[in-house]
Image (cartoon, rainbow, N blue to C red; front, side, top):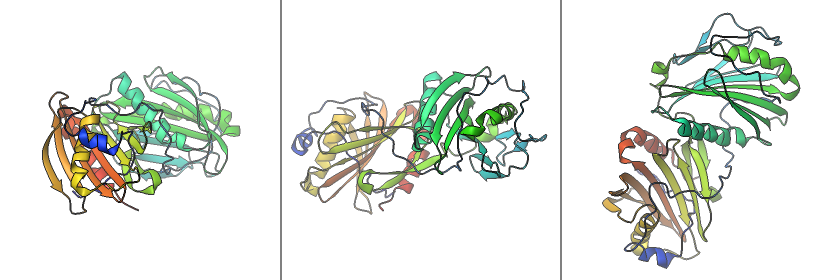
Length: 372
């Protein structure tokens, strides 16, 4: 592959010190990334949007328990089934479905509300911590990209799903309230999002909860989807590059050191992450020392015992290093290049046990990498 190098800035030391670290450094393990609070990147919305309401919906009873409400719409008597077969659900009569590979969106013709049902194949069954990390990532990367986003509450439901209620301002400048249900079946994460104009929420919520309880899922169908197919285009600092990132991966930024910014994207199970950094202290980094500089960074931030197993110049002029850490039991792949005074490094780190699972996500990221 010939991916370009991501340009970000990682908290480093000085150029001279880092070159020296190519021989003597201290490793920091499989997750040396963020210590800073995540910073929103405002990824461009890819789901249709509408306005929101404000008060938690009634607690969701177990699937099949159903409840009847007085919503100002008629609920379909027949189930809609997504073309993938991954889920079925009722929906408001007269709301036309807008289908995507990962889900379906319905909008009220009068512009009062909308609903979206989606599924993501994450490849593994999450424990509680990984599930929470996933929900945090979706809330931060997607919903928090809207103005005035505020999470109001989280509550585990009787059927095991997690309800997250939030308020925000929609793309048209209208105050809105959204509530979402998240749950996992097998390796598939399902999500139901219900949006309404704030002043319409009370009238709509009961009907939405009834629709939520009509859902049926088929994880066998959902698990055939590509891994983390719901993605956004991330734009690097100063618009140096763009690449595709899963919405379900947690984003962190670290700017603790001079001349460097590091943006990290971590899988919910913390078995892999991608880290992009750019170093620029205003001086030109000669190509003759760029390799030593890159190795110094790898040893400083990933592991002292890094062994480079392959070093190859790419057609676009960047250089690829394949490496591993025996003590950390993980594999790494890095691309680096210099552009004037800027040193660029894009690195993928993965636990050896999860290489086969996550290499498609990394490959897709490389294919998506562009320099505007």
